[in-house]
Image 1: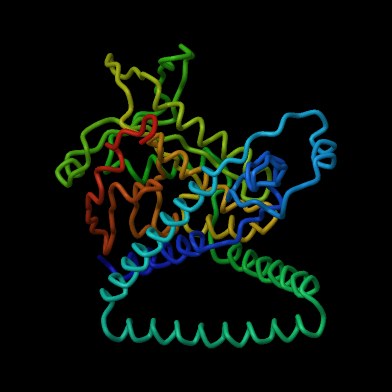
Image 2: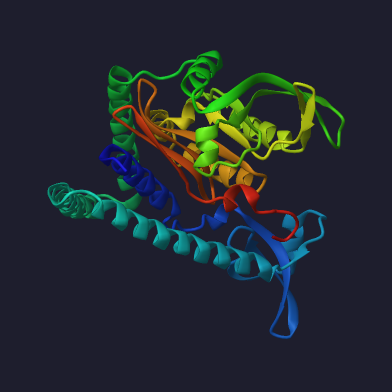
Length: 367
């Protein structure tokens, strides 16, 4: 495994861990009046529909009924808190695994590189502590609200500066046709690629057309890649405008193809799985999304949430390590882990099956 690949994976792990770390529930956005039995009576209370917590004490009946405006309140649901706790536990478990993987990757560096990396980490911790002290001082001089406004403005300033640097130093995609041309050319040596394959949805009997059906070449099959056809839907997502709407439609489109039967060269078949290939398959394009994602719209969190749901429908992402003009490898990634990896060093490709269960696990009903 080459050092560029290791460094890229460490960056990915750092981003994943940042998203997984605990963030307090914004209960005020999810409160609903419900009825709850306690103390020998039935009371109106407010429950957060995200974390399941009861906020405040019992409400006065006349005030609760007035706010309900004729609607019947639902019963207090303890399952919400149980589910939220389970999700928190699973998140912590994943954090632990990512931390262990990160440690092993760092150990693969030579001693000099590892020492440099650890030194940089310590410098960051010291600088972060100093910044934290300055923020506390600012808060004491003014108040929390002004501190938050100041931090938000500084965040926007830095993001604008980063975007200008990215625009100068990187070449970003601008359209879906450009993405298709790049993908077809780059992956033609690893896969048989069939564009614009038609099929029919098994339930709705609606005709469909997927961007590509791929089949692995022999050297991939010899490395463990399952010899089955799979689909790729190519999408270009504007990181600034109308992102969530178009991204959700793209994800659902890919999900729907797994319930279709396609026809190619006189043979009917179903896809083993389906992948999204987009400009967000490239790390520098995801950085652009992060720049335009703030606490109000949460584009990155929405994207991660969509991919987590898509994973249960056997929809993953074809990720490229590096930039479009300097590729260091590629990965077929699902929210539950990687299926297959390729690292490229000095024009030599090394293939590895990571976890076959990501495409073979059956996810129906209460799995």
